[in-house]
Image (cartoon, rainbow, N blue to C red; front, side, top):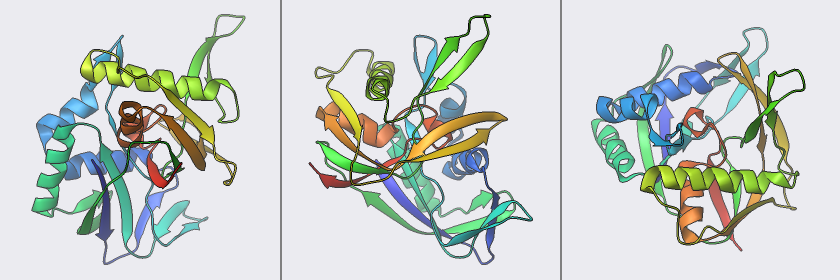
Length: 247
């Protein structure tokens, strides 16, 4: 399920420019179900020594500006966050959190939940827009034996295949088998502009891309892409998509 959460604070909300880690912790705390959130944070769904959490969230959306001296982004009105889960358990936990109407704590900022809207989408070929940037990578070994992380650009021919392979690993981690129809393809939408984003998480630089994409594939693969997020690092707020139009 995919939700658009709207929060309000009496005071301006101030967060660091790279707020992924803070927002991740705040959302998991807001959900409140310690058993489920501990599972997501510590374990997730396992496959081939990899862990997939099958949820993601958007960037913070709303009127804001960047304060250069404080190196903070300041939101001056309501803040919206898209939160999406692939599992039914996630839907139940969100429903419980909404019912409690507990505040979202972003550092010292207290935000009250004022609205929760369920977003319904169709799992067929479509144009999507990123609500948080998409990243996908490989770990390469250099000639001197060192490991190097290579981030793929959406304009590279391997990008779509890498995203598809990542989705298949997620599906097998959740169900234990591959989907009957493994068709999936992602292409940049010619009507939109791609923008590269460079950010840091726990001191590690991540390259990612914002923009509009065309998704083609089976209903199973498209549902997984739209609800779990595409690419890597979904659980820290990368790869959140919103459907814009059908193809």
